[in-house]
Image 1 (cartoon, helix red, strand yellow):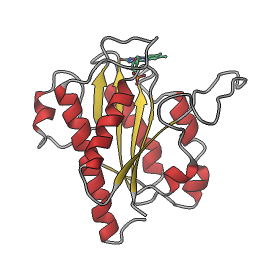
Image 2 (tube, helix red, strand yellow):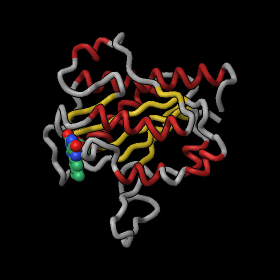
Image 3 (cartoon, protein in one colour):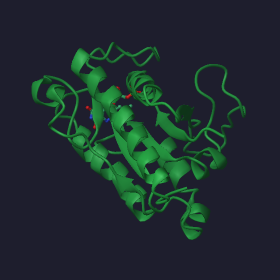
Image 4 (tube, protein in one colour):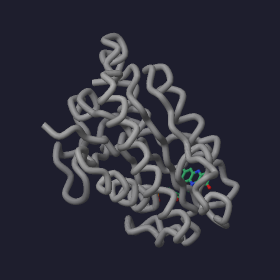
Length: 208
Ligand SMILES: Cc1cc2nc3c(=O)[nH]c(=O)nc-3n(C[C@H](O)[C@H](O)[C@H](O)COP(=O)(O)O)c2cc1C
């Protein structure tokens, strides 16, 4: 079976979803490994709303097996008050069994996010997203300044992970506004380098 990089994201207005698609393109450039794009359902504060098991459109919901069997994880979130979005945190908080079994130890991971404003907490979101992954024993991979776009970007893209500034935020649409060239390049490069690292670790018998 071909190993997969799990690209797991939560997006409401499309910015994070667009990044996820570019991360997937980067993974797709690497032979011998494939992207698997998954999302998570909305959560309700009252816990009274339920979602159908298969969404009407877009990526399907992530299963525990998608995460358990991945060779690497790229985790993407919409920024919520400078932090990870609740639906994604809800999914992660249900992974204690994987933590107990040490399932994700030594697997590489990266993070990405979308926010409405340039200084609205992208870096705190990305750093916060790393914390549970470190508890799981994952190896976090950022973006190196050897990528020219990281020095040139006037919008998203950080050494902590790919990002997008969704300036034309449109809550009624899930299309998102287009990524800038630099944001797209960095998301793609992140996916490619994560896939390569996963294969390298697997070749050395270091993971999965
Ligand atoms: C409850 C809430 C909190 C938010 N907090 C922030 C924030 O702290 N900083 C920011 O720049 N944008 C914030 N936003 C805007 C979203 O991060 C922005 O719309 C982003 O594009 C969402 O990602 P998405 O397009 O993938 O859904 C917030 C939006 C909501 C609904």
